[in-house]
Image (cartoon, rainbow, N blue to C red; front, top):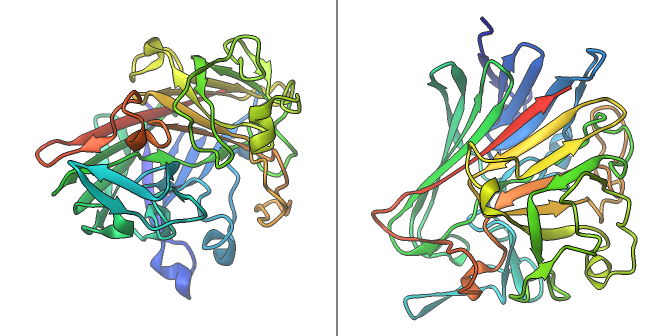
Length: 355
């Protein structure tokens, strides 16, 4: 029987990287590494149809890049992933001003979000699964958000190579929460080129269109007859350059797809399927979340160089961010993101690779 092995080591032997832990989870040919900085899914190594193993996440091994332009690569982003308009929220009639990350919005929890913190970490086991459980305490008023929040993220690898990401959180005051993982996938191997020929399938009939800030307008846009229709497998690049106003706003895909109810839950149909025809690798994403933000690295411009020596340009990877909808606190019709004392936030996303 395959046994999941878990090891721990510092990211670097000395310097600032020595304070960052790298946890390695391995099961058969699948190997995953997690950093305590940002509770980050740093690497995933899986074989292709010939048995050749490759690293399929975009990443950097340079600490200056990990702390800089690659700071969100694979990280747990929060307290509120994605965008909140006008850098403010209102709870129980009281307005809270949030730390802005740009004009008119707060992105990924603020300029000093969860991706920038060192989390505590410990080994964890659940039946045959094993991995690492990370914890972060976010004080009341952190980045403007009310309530002291305790957050846990567990990465659990199963003997068959399926990786589960489990989130939980509790708060001392009413607050909002939206957590996701920001990994970028290239199933042909990091640095191998763009992902425009990858096939993508999404269990979604609608997206939430955005304004010029890429903040949802509150409307729902059916995907039928648009470049956003991935209800059957289609190459990512097939229509990414079509003259659609939503594509023009983002320079590609950077939108929230509304998942169908049959694609929500650990035992549900996959929310997303990503396939690389060249290597034969396939990724199935299942989630308890109601939405998935698909971002095709439209703005990448070579600021990060991967371990293979290739600088990442546009479309070098694709992020499949399972989450609640962007800007939900301002749209009562969107799924609720409020968390109150006495209740626990819980979310699960699983990644299943095949080849």
